Structure formats: C-alpha cells, structure tokens
Image (cartoon, rainbow, N blue to C red; front, side, top):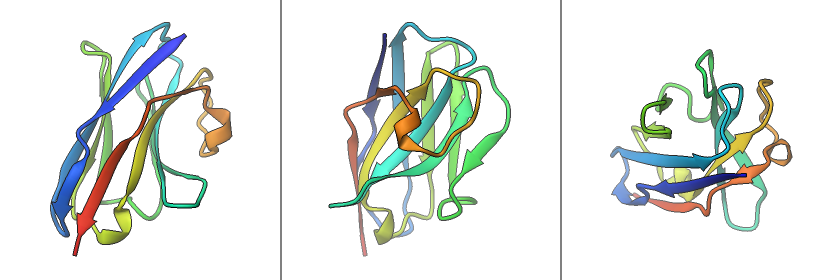
Length: 124
C-alpha cells in the first residue's frame, strides 16, 4: 500500500504562485509514476503532470506547460508541483497519485493510489 498526503493548497491572486507537496509513505518503488491531477466541479479528474519516481522525463498537460513544474525529492519521499502564473481557470481540487508501473499515463483510471486532494483557488 502507498499513502499519499497533499498539502500547500490555498487562495492566491491571478499571476501568483503556489507549491503543492505530496508526501508518500508505505510501499513505494523507483519505477512508480507520480502524477498530479485536478478536478473541476462536476467533471472528471484531469491530468496535470507526471514524473517517474526514479527520474526521467517530465510530462505536462498543454494547459500548464511552461507555468507548472513537477519535481521529486527522494530523501523526503515527496513530490512537488510548483505552480506559477496562476489563472482563475486553474481553480480546482488538486490530487497527487501514484501508478505502480514504469509506463507514463495521463489516464486517471490507471493510477492506483490517491491522496485526499487539496483546494487551489485563484481569484481574478
């Protein structure tokens, strides 16, 4: 089992920045894919970014590329999502997720483990 706990959400003005953290514990492997998703009201979870726990390429949704950065710190078992130049349309609940496979995926259904989510609200 893998446990994921997000933190760092909040209210920010448009153009501002936030950094989300995802602390992982339990059974984790270097081949796991760590992802960030977000959910808008009454919609399915949308892919934001992903990285393999052991390193490798970074995958971003087109809507956030150039503004968001995913990273991980193996010494702290933590994955981060640095969000810059935030827009009101980035307002959503953000989730950290883990996929027990080395293959990248943007499908939320392919991730087995999820955090509880953290609210990000961007005011105009």
